[in-house]
Every structure is written in structure tokens, then in C-alpha cells.
Length: 197
Image (tube, rainbow, N blue to C red):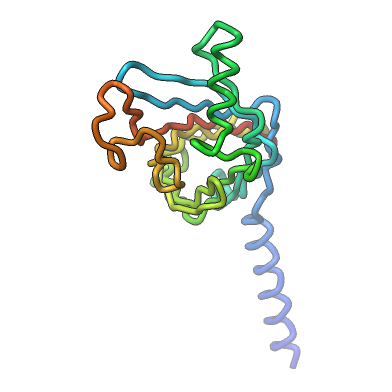
């Protein structure tokens, strides 16, 4: 009986040590320091800007990303390459319209990690569900993670096909004879998430 009790206590102690060293940390992401920058190209050039993060978190364990998510506020979308105020606002309004992101109906877009792999604990391959206009489609992209004290920074570039989210305006895959009015389907999001452990 004493042997069984001692064994149970030992296993309990071992289990306690094991799980206390591998607790998943919820890294609170600083929305002010974190950024999402977008870029889209067309035959005659490109446009780029930013969109605000409204919510984000990372599941972190022993220096590795296990999961996490972020939400972006589509009402905050901005254009940075057009300096004329009227032209700038015209493009912003168009991006918010049903031709593109239907922001009045879909104020937020989200991304949730479903898989994260790494061979060195710094360079990750992230897979997750990107939801735009209420439509979910999986994406995979590289992410680099750096630590400085309690500060964790995750930097990644998401490339997605806009037509998978019912954004087909001037897409060469859906409309003919667009010539120099064609807009390419590929859109990139440069994401920087900064948080404290």
C-alpha cells in the first residue's frame, strides 16, 4: 500500500513538473504596434495601404507558435499610394463597396491558425482559415518569430486569391477583353503581430 501511494505521489509530482514546463501561454497582441498592410496589382500599376487589427492573440509554448487568430476591421481600410484626397477617398469607397469587400455587410475579416510547423522554432509554416466577406478558404504562408525579453514578434506574408472570396471585379479569369483595365487576382497581406508573454 505504501509502495502504491509513493508511486502515485511520484507520478503526480512528475506530471506536475512536466505540464508546468509546457503550459501554453496566451500572448496578448498589442494592436497599436501590430500592423496589416495590403497590396494589390493591376496591369497599369499597384495600390497599397493598411487596415487596423481589432483583435489578436497567439498560443505560445516553449518558443513555438501552436495557434492563434487575428481579426481586422475592414471599415478602417486605407490607401497610401494616392496622395490626392478626392482620388484617395474614391478608391477607399470603391474598396468598401460590393465590387470588392462589401464592408457594410462584412465589417470584419479573420484568420485562425489550424496548423503551425517549424524545424528551428523561428521559421514557421502556418496554415489557417482566412475569412473574407463571410467566406472561408485555407491559406498557407511563412512566418518568422523573434523574441526580445518578454516581447514576441511574428512577421508573415499572406498571399491569397481574391476570387475565392467572391471578389471578381475586373478579374481576367472571369471577364474578357479587359486589356489594361484588368486587376490581378493575387492580393498580399504583410502581417506583423507584436505581443508580450
